[in-house]
Every structure is written in structure tokens, then in C-alpha cells.
Image 1 (spheres, chains in turn yellow, brown):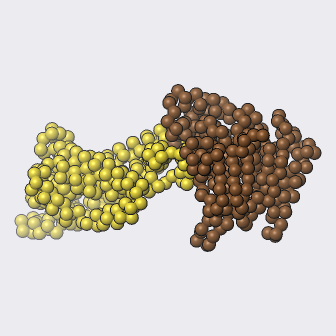
Image 2 (image 1 turned 120 degrees about the vertical axis):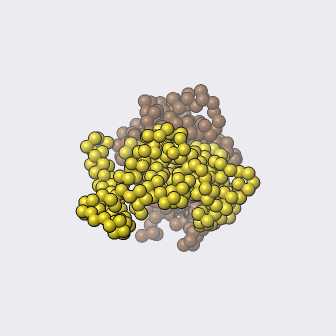
Length: 295
Length: 260
Ligand SMILES: Nc1ncnc2c1ncn2[C@@H]1O[C@H](COP(=O)(O)OP(=O)(O)O)[C@@H](O)[C@H]1O
Ligand SMILES: [Mg+2]
């Protein structure tokens, strides 16, 4: 992509959307914070000019809706002005959540691939397993996560693993479904070809089904890694965990620190974008190595 | 008298489909001797592909018997007695040309040195030296099909089963590949079963032409055809060539006539 192409194809559309969001956000901040400010000023007997009033709605310590610059300042303060490993640093909390996410994602991906290989090779599994897998995803995770965390704590499993297990639970599903499709994607022609070589199932799996499933694998991993992050955050909520983006959200809501909540949310989004982008970059690299025409 | 390597006795095959049974092969009896070049010719839908697939153990006949190299098709497949060339090149898009040729050799469990030696010699045989590291999409259709022939030959089978390998190619490329295939056959002495619907192609290449007719697919006529070794493309203007081509055409017409 050329520089001008990049500006035209990416920067302009993404930038305009961002601008629209910011304007809407400021507008929302004003209209949601104005009633409190009006009330507050009346009791204090203050009279302000409109500009002063506007400024006040954007700088409340505990606003109903924090303004973008308040969140940006909070983010800045809690990432760049504190040591990354201090308890106040969002980098530290992001790392705690990230490590659970990555562990859960790795386990979920492995589980998903194993299930898919089983389903593709064993007809009985194909018929009996898939409905259960789909059913497993209809259980609301917000309701089950606390139970899982508390139960695991009761048998002495605490820390990283319970959160990672919630991530696993959410991430194995897209991988399993995507991989079943991917492993079945080779056409009959190629399957016949392997048959003329009298290849066994293992050889057909390694030399045909798995390479053919690679694009499906990366697409489903992009969904799975985002789901893993949500799983890890949800896993941090019920126990009142002391670290992680989930714990920041929880603490923020206890003390009505809306600015903190929003900063934590943004930190979570940044982690999500980084993760999905990382999967995407690896996917493109592998794709090119596997002879795909460059786009 | 050379040995019979493929022998079909009263073959029958009916496909059960949702629209009822399709009688694809009826009472096929055919013997193919070692070193022969046999073409199956006929209008589309007459069961040429199905017959080839039965020989290759990709379909199971519903009646009759086939033997390949004195074995059942299943045993012959497991013994890798044949190389199969499909109508499309069926190259794996994520493998380079040399890796594609290596595919059957890896399945066979050959060591790397043997694999490399066979890759080099077979790509040379089909004139693809220098294209080892290319991916299939970087090659023309004709080159892709040549790569798939090299892949089939690399197995070093005694027999080649080819299903309209040049069907999708233009006339000029096709002529060229016909000449190359003929040279290859003369050099390697392999038994070839070759599906085509081109009369000149069949007459030019074959020692025996099997004319088939459709609904149900059966053998209408078997025409001997041996224009001698060392023929070049210009043999197609000789009276002998034209006579056999005429005979094939008449056979196709006769087998087809009740259809119109
Ligand atoms: N797998 C299949 N299932 C059902 N019908 C088939 C199948 N394969 C081929 N047929 C039918 O069998 C007949 C012969 O097909 P085929 O051998 O492909 O003909 P050809 O190669 O001579 O064009 C056709 O009517 C075709 O529709
Ligand atoms: Mg056919």
C-alpha cells in the first residue's frame, strides 16, 4: 500500500468515524452531566456564563459520563507516569488480564482443534457432540462464571487458572466450529488424489486437511482471542480480584469512579485491538508463506 | 504376446441418486495388455470417467469383476500400481511445484535423497526444470497439467490412468503435450489408459481405441490403431490416420444415433 493509498483507504474513513464518536461523546457528556451541575450550582447559589457551565460539565470529579479528555488524562497518568509494575498502573492490570487471556486462548484453541479433528474423523462424535457444544454456548457466562470461580476456589484452584478456564470456555467454540469447516474444506478431487496414493487418515490429515484449514484457523482465532479477553475480564469480576482490568472495572463501580471505569474499558479495548491485530499479522505471514497471491 | 494387465469382465455400475438410479456402466468387458496405449472415447456422460475410476478403485462396480495387475483394484491401489492424472491438475495451492511432486513420495515414505532425485528427473521429463520453486498459480494451465503428470510419474507406476488431462487446454498447447506424451510413453513403456473426447487425439496417441456410447454407458466398438512408433504430428494428414479417424467417427455416430 502506498502512503497516499494508506491515507485514503484507512486513515480518512477510520479518522472520520473517530471524529463522529468524539463529537457524540462530548455531546453525551454535556447532556448527562448538565442536570447534576445545574442542581449543584443552584444550591451553591452560583451563576455562571454558558462557557463556564460547559467547562464545569466536562471536569466533574465523578461525572455521570466522563468526557473524552478526562479519560485520556486518566489513561495517560495511569500508564506513562507510574511504574508499569505498580498496582496503580493500567499496564500492570492489563498484563494480569492479558496473561489469563493468553493461557485461556491457548487452551481453548488446542481444545477446539482437538474437538474438530474428532468430529471430522469420528461419525459418532459428529452426530452426538455438536449439539452439546452449541448448547454449552447458550449458557450465559455472566451467570456461570461466578459459580465456576467460587467452586474452583473451594477446591483450592485460584489465581490465573480459573480466569483462564473461563477464557477457554468462550474461545474453544469458534475454533471448533471454524476448524470443522476448515478440515472439511478440501475438495473431493484432492481427497481422491490422496486415495490414489493410498494415503492413510493421518497422512490425509497432515498433508491435506490441516493445510487447507489454515485460513479458517486464523479467522476463528481472531474471534476466539477477543472472546478470551472477555472471558478473562468476566472471570475477574466475581471474586473481587485484586488485579486485572476486571478488578479495575469493579473497583471503579464501587466508588463511582466513572473516569477510572472508562479508562479501564479503553485499556481493555486497546488490548483487544492488539491481540486481534497480532493474530491477523501472523495469519497474513503464514498465508504468504503458503503461496497465497499477495493482495 | 504381452501380458494382460487390466481385465474387466461384464462390469456394471449403477449410481443410486435422488432422481433414481443412473446406469453409468453396462456390461463392460475389456482387456488391456502391458505397454498398450488405450483411449476411451465417447460423448460426455457415457461413463469414461466412471470406468477409469473403477479401475483406480475410486468407485466400486455393482456387478462384474476387474483385475489390475492380477489383483483386485483395491489391492492394486494399495500397491500403488497406477498413477492417476485428473482432468484438473489438482495441485495443492500451498505447495510449490517441487513440493507437489513430492506429495505422493512423502506419502510413500521415501527418504529425502530419493525424493529429490525423482523430483528432478520427472520435472525434467515434462520440461518444467526451473519452475521447482513456483507456486501453481504462477504457472499456465498447460504447465500445471504437466506438473501433475510429473507428480503421477514420480510414483514410478507401471500404469498411467489419465482422465482428459488436456481437455481444458487450447489446441496448440494440446498438440504439443500430445507429442510429449507420446515420446514419454515410447521411452517408459508404461501402460496408459487415456480418456478423451477428441478423435484426432485418440487416433494420434493410441494403440487401441475404445468407442463408448451413453445411456447406459457401454462399449460400442474397439478399434485397433497403431500408426507405428516415431510418429510426428504431421501423421495426421496421412490416409491411414484419416481412415481410422473416420472409423472412430462412424462408431461414435452409430453408438449415438438412437439418441436424436
Ligand atoms: N458419483 C456419481 N453419482 C451419480 N451419478 C454419477 C456419478 N458419477 C457419474 N455419474 C453419472 O454417470 C454417468 C457417467 O458419467 P461419467 O463417467 O462422468 O461420464 P464421462 O466421463 O464419459 O463424461 C453420467 O450420467 C453421470 O451423471
Ligand atoms: Mg469425464
